[in-house]
Amino acid sequence: MNIRIDALKCINCMACEMACSFHRDDGFAFLSSSIMAYRAREKKDYFGVLLKEEENLITARPEGIDISRIGEEADPDKEADASAKPILLREGCDLCEEMEDYGPLCVVICPVDAITCEE
Image (cartoon, rainbow, N blue to C red; front, top):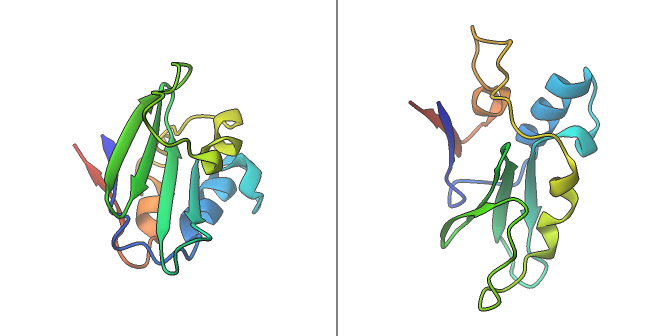
């Protein structure tokens, strides 16, 4: 199972972050979440979502998805994304494995279906 993110649907409500942090800590502490919504300061209504997996960092932006290997040197031709740095210190997504009756909480809680699962 993989999580898919459609940044064009994202409204930056941060419900995915709250659900993930609750799964991790039984409380709402954004710093423990494996998923992070962000908003670009230079563009109004430009939202993105970062998801840390065990080996990959998925960056979903309106223009598309970027998957990079954690620990690999960044491509010098690619613009650096400073918003990704805080999430690299967090645990990778475990797909809320002990909640098999519900699936990943970020998928369940997303009010606009911007986050979905695929087999």
